[in-house]
Length: 365
Length: 225
Image: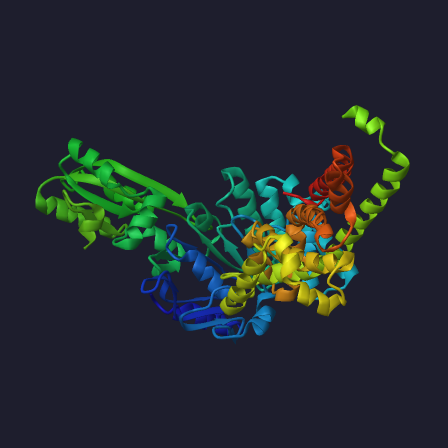
């Protein structure tokens, strides 16, 4: 894990400073008399004002615990957490409440109050924050307009579809004008088209209202659509962190490869490799498509460089503002020619060789 | 049997039946008026102090849980006799309807505590977490989330308890109280007049059916999920 010194310096220069700072945070749950599970393991990161910070990982990676540490719903076993300029680790519940009122939260299962109408749900955090009745009503109307549910104000949650419920959840989370929005698997219970709708809404909240968002998810889609920076979480640790483009566009090795790879489908799986091996005997090379035109140019000169190649696997994806992907080719030719070809390829993108017979993960070790 | 009803001295039994019905209603309403609130508080205490809930507190939960489990299984007829010294202290008499009400309060308070706790367990913990995430205090969560969200099941639970109170009141005669139970035994059973016993049965069945109907409707009205 890197301390993102460049980002925080930039934010400080802009008069902000990180809104959220985790320093060596660990959260351990005791599961029995002598057994325990470390859900979050020595995690450090910062989130700057106005940023969308994504955390991605398989279920059980500790993401849910991580996001609940941000608003104090979970307490760290060790380490310090600073949110909105206040150290919340070790803060008593009564003081935490004030910090929480400046942090909205959206849940996977929506968690709407079934006994309250849509308007009642959105008004609840305003009541907690002590808003006057007429101000509350105006704010609720404004928010329902923002999420496109003005006509559902008097409906009960049971009468809404999943996507509508989540839009109410977002309106409720934004009601008290929070600085931070926590999105806990906010689209995981939704179908693809509704997911799109909810992600657009989160993006608007970030862009139009300037709200800082921390989103945890197991869906690459969410990260690609809204995140500026991403942390890949595995077994309680952040195994990779950085701008979304950088994290996804590099050929990877180790723990992060298994997640990012399986989600992006841009590198061959073990099954793919076995199938590829049956039809080709060349050296398997993976190259990043950061600059796909340059990669294309090198491939175009393959014959002139004395090698032949075959495309065996590939995938391209887009993030919030760029495209990236990986291409796997099988290269044949004499050793010197292949070495020359690879040297040219390296100038066009990041190159990694998949060693024969070994799985991707073993190759990395 | 129909013949027996036809030969019944209605001018005697009807006023008697009416008085017994009023006594039963009086005992049930008085006992419930007191135990409804105390039982709710106790049930909320059980629910909120349970491990993982908003006021999680092992010693408090264990103590209340133990007391509830100790008093609740005592059969009502035994409780009537067993706490008579206490009844004497509290209401000044060990016999009659007032004494019965005192014992009914004890029995139903602990029954309600358990019923409330069990019905609140069905509340989605997610909505409580959502309220916590908004910065709501624990007291606010109890009154504006837990109670409204659990209201439907609570109404059904309370209906069940009121019917149980009618059941308890039928034993009033054992310590000199009145009501429909006493009427059925003294006027019917002991005088070999099963038709008189059945008069009480009919009134009780009608009361219970009516209560359950009202309870079900009210619960359906407040339940939104």
